Length: 123
Picture 1 (cartoon, rainbow, N blue to C red):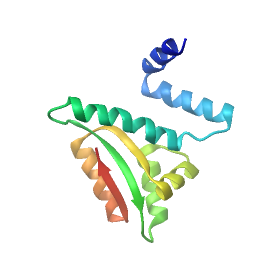
Picture 2 (picture 1 turned 180 degrees about the vertical axis):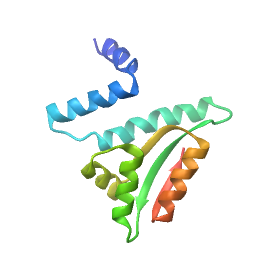
Picture 3 (picture 1 turned 30 degrees about the horizontal axis):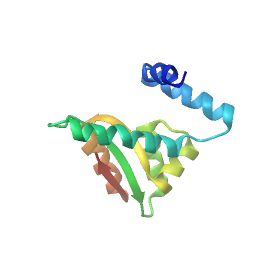
């Protein structure tokens, strides 16, 4: 039963997966901000071992320090489309901003966030 469920979840589009997360958050009264970061780390680790030339990157906000916290929250919301409170939590605690990003876009996101006080890692 669990294997079937995992197969079905694995076949979802990105939009469908986002809708599933929102419905689970509403039904169970939870936030998926932290679990998403953990779940995103596993594919990145597997991809690093299997790829020779990397064409897609995962952009991770490690931390933020500076006086432009409001700007950082706005930028995180722009990048991720997260609600205000989730974006604030990500700025305060870090997490995965975007996965499967081309190198140019990943570097642009990194430089924009670093310019306002963020510490960003590309994986």
